[in-house]
Amino acid sequence: MTLHVFAGGTLTGFLESLLETFRLRENQDCMNSYAKLGHLPGPVRGVLWMMLSSLFYALIYVVVRGLAESFAVNQIVFFRAVLGSAFMLPWLFTAGLGAVYTRRMPTYLWRMLFSYVGAVAWMYGIAGMPIADANALMFTMPLFTVILAAIWLAERPGIHRITATIVGFAGALIILRPGMIEISMAALATLFAAAMFSGALIGSKMLTATENPNAMVFYLYTLMIPPAAIGAMFGWTNPGLSDIPLLIALGVCTVGAQQCQTRAFRAAPASLVVIVNYVQLPLIALFGWLIFAQSTDLWTWAGAAVICTSTYYVSYREGRSARMSADNKCDGGKS
Figure (cartoon, rainbow, N blue to C red):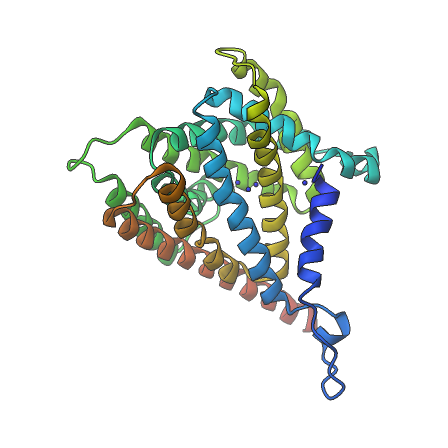
């Protein structure tokens, strides 16, 4: 699953200051809860955070594509891990070592392995196909999550989720068009990356109940450094001064995207936030056209529409189930 010198504390504070500029003015005639808090309503804040996250993720595609012209994919993954970890150090110095104390290291480790393998496959896909096509295929991630959750967590998806999942993968087939065009290794790698990131997402869900969100980001990149370093040893290229701006941008966008996304899901319902996340596709298509002269055909847009609709429906059903479960618990507590 994250496009903080801008470190965990500094970039987060900067982003929060942006939202502070949109504070509601207190109305003497209507002292509601939002005015008392002096902030925008949760759904609005969630939308703004996710828009920032989508922008960061869109920029990651551009940065990775640019770096892939000079570096092997494994080396880019290594740079991302090192920079992501380094940009979280100011938070660690402020919070202290106690903030990263955990008894759940095995979960952190297998979550990292899924993320690492997914990152290698994802960046291979970005480097080998139009970035808008790669992004559209990555929207299948929630569909893989439904499948993996059924296998690992013994969750039983209903007929609605099963149908939405099948429809979503049909959208992926629209983009790939098997039998009409040759399916590239980059496209297959991107789908594999979506499956791996889904496994990592399940690990994140398992950790959120007990773990600090910043610690989760710190461990993700710090634990990824050793395996990424081994992979980067093969075909290493020394970065030059001209590469530094892109490398810094990679670190900033990686951690910034995750921090914004976390705050978006905290502030607003997932069914609302997921819709805003689809802003990535037109943004990335625009960047691909302006920077890399890549065009996005009608098949990609059609397939993306099918995938986005199905993943939204899965998120909507998940949110509805969660609300019903919470209501049942409340009713049970009252009786």
